[in-house]
Image (tube, rainbow, N blue to C red):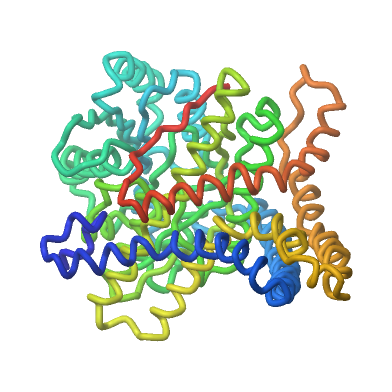
Length: 505
């Protein structure tokens, strides 16, 4: 089962195996970059074929937007319903629910005390028995003494609110690790097991671990909702549990483009919640502690939040899933001390997320090694993963180029055809119809907004609507381009290190 712990082709000692894995690493970028280069070449050599492809692709995009918008609305309605449920009352109908402990790991790097404090206040305000909450503030040794001082301040103020408050110091320069969230969480989980669970005799199957970003504020009934789903799941130890991340901690303060990107991320997760067969753990999520012990949390790669799902999926021969909670947690939109810095940070964050394409070679190689997963299931998961990362990198640019590229490169013979004359109008009409997705997002984004701070005028509400005009720009510059860079790095064998998003409010 050594293949479960792979992070890149270089980890393999066998030359033949390494070549296979390298081929799988090249595939995502080959498809995305190949599609973009191909449309330029074919627009010159075969403009009629490209024009027909443009029409088919535009129709496909329109249908996809309608399909996803339907799931977005359905998920939003379900979330509103779920947040009105008294989950503690529902728990009282289940036996022995008070035996469940929640281990909350909060990895921190150089965040200031104000950000950490608001997270702990949200935990302290949770409508769940506090004596069943174990909180671990996971500090990086490389962050210096100031980070440890802030951790001690947090413990002094909040330790009385929980069953146990543990500070862990993740050592730097551990061989085989990548400095980042995954390695910090893996260290913190090991420390919590030794210093708390074993000390107090708490069995792993009675513990749910929540891997939260440091800015994550769970809504009041999150742990009650999570406990209920854990106790009523068909196979609780073969499931992760995914809330909906809503980036509204600082949504009024963040610049418009950052708000659009953050809210788009929320809406994508809403759509995925309505399609649980495609759902993969993302960012802040929860899973059984027993599963983490059996599988081992990834500590040598960037995309740890999704890799723990795929690692578990392969380890249990495909018998692993993510249960959608339809319950929100609140997080930060990207915001730095200056607009330029915010733009740079936003691009780097999207590039880090797009580096999740490293799961494609991992999964394909795992499918070769694991003979117990049905062939149809392997094809299904491969298609979903490929299509998602291909669309991320190529779709927005194809939409931008394809409406006019055959006209520019197709030559005079093509330009005098009826197809060339009608192509721009047809594509424009189809893209106009596709704006239903943008209008749906704009409407739901208003309903998700927290109360407007007193220092902002009502005109700010208008900017919250017109900000969605920036969506085409954000899809290209903060969607396609960082995804293409990430996939180019996979092709060239230049791995991406973990970049910590700066938190500023």
